[in-house]
Length: 362
Ligand code: N2P
Image 1 (cartoon, helix red, strand yellow):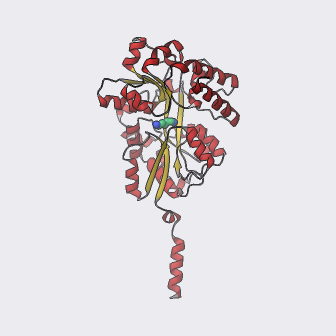
Image 2: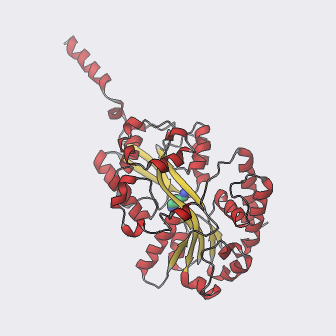
Image 3: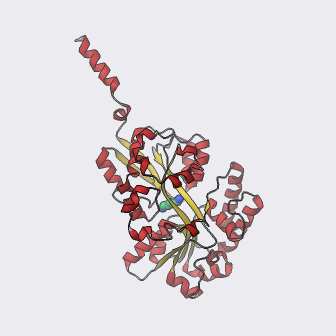
């Protein structure tokens, strides 16, 4: 009898940590960023119940992460934000032995992401994209003619053009670390400059355009572009393509285009990470590994129109998406893109202050 009891005790101790973990997972991801069936497929495969919340701003995610005890097990910061959050101790190191699908990832893109996280120790690329211009082809042509500069930031950063587009609606992303550098770049300044004077010049231009901007928001523009409620949005590549897709389906004659302006644009990487205080790290690894499955990745890209960094998924990505220069830009366009700058506290404060001024128009 004694022996039996001790065997039972031993068995209890031998339960692996994975089995000991509650079968739940809390995910916090960008809105409009996953295929409709992905979460269901993961739940069915693993028996892990997923709570899936969304945001549309790195600043919102960062505030939650720095406050701690978010309750989330997987979150998706953009690489520049991730870097400074890693420095603040926000993320756990990944256990790569639990991520066999890492072999599917494109080594060159992972190397680019390693600039923000040496050795890719804390994050795996989920999707990547550019910050460019979404526009309503007909509404813009009506106001600026057939030669409207839709391939240039002058479409909205030249006040004369912006004024003519005011009535059909311009929207800006509520993303200061993307909008101010885009304005700096248009002015011929280094978009990655952290000089106060340069940031102020970018802000000055945006303030000049401010009277012609209907709103600052980072997800509303998808449906507004699709419905013809705004005609030009500074937006994220895949989101604009989703708007185009919705417009096509609605068959109301709204035609949406996306351009990576020829002056250049921001290229960003969104990273799958595990908060250090996650209580379901095994489940989190299982989820990240699942997302790196070639078919799952391809299915997500085919749905959200964002480029992924998963080489093995490419044969399953729709040809139309693979061939679209706005999603997978050709070499000469890639060469014109800049990478997100990691801002220190001081620069961050300057940007936040400038942004408040821009938005209030003062
Ligand atoms: C998805 C937006 C993700 C891009 N809606 C922002 N990095």
